[in-house]
Amino acid sequence: MKRVIDAKDLKYRELNSSIRKILGQSYLSDKKVDGRVELTLENILGQRYIGDGLKEDHLINIMGIPGNDLAAFMDGPTIEVFENGQDGIGNTMNAGKVIIHGDVGDIPGYSMRGGEIYIEKNAGFRCGIHMKSYQEKIPVIVIGGSAGNFLGEYMAGGIIILLGLYRQKMTHFPYSGTEQLVGNYIGTGMHGGAIYIRGDVMDYKLGKEVKKVQIDEKDREILNKYTGNYCKYFNIDKKEIKSSQFLKLIPFSHRPYGRLYTY
Image 1 (spheres, helix red, strand yellow):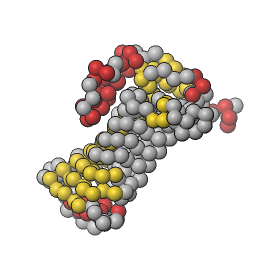
Image 2: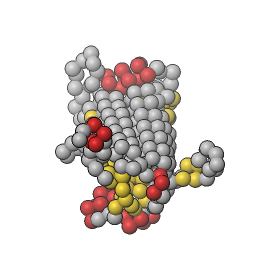
Image 3: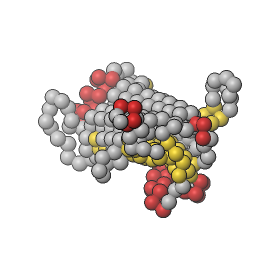
Image 4: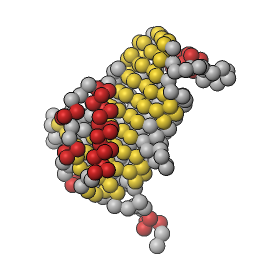
């Protein structure tokens, strides 16, 4: 079933109420929707909280730029955004997919617990902060371009893949105008999961809690799977991305701060 909502002049509360009503997930009704709904949101301009807490395998196409906390606490649907995204995408997301055709702001994947986020180009600061995994739930973020400072900060589980196909320019002196793959303090406080970076990273950019290791066959399988998805979603030639070009970052310890509080 295909449905369309024209969001022009709609406030975020009105918009999200309409989305829930169409998907049969209104707080005021127990009515269920049979089958998968493909919902297109037109003229989106900064409305917040789209997709928050939604369940089941529905598809939401967003034409425009959604506001903060897109797909927060989401548990199943696929959201595809055909413009840039803002801050807090996938906040505490549990399952589903978010596909962004452009750049995103800060803290995408904050406390993400499951599902997948694919960012075509660049991400801001603190991407993947507090990501975690449990049993079969392994959250994944794939960034096609570059990322800002504190990538994977306090990461407790999951996978971050940074491809470096696009680069954002630094704005602070004395590096203004130069392009970077990733900012500083990578993996600060990290105590679980893995970060894969396509290209080399100078040691001074790493948090003291992480170390570089060589990828193995299992890592290659992971990279082939998720970079393959990325290439399919954004029409990229997969031959450009070879697993041999990646380094892997993992934490030194699963209890990086244990000695600060216990003997």
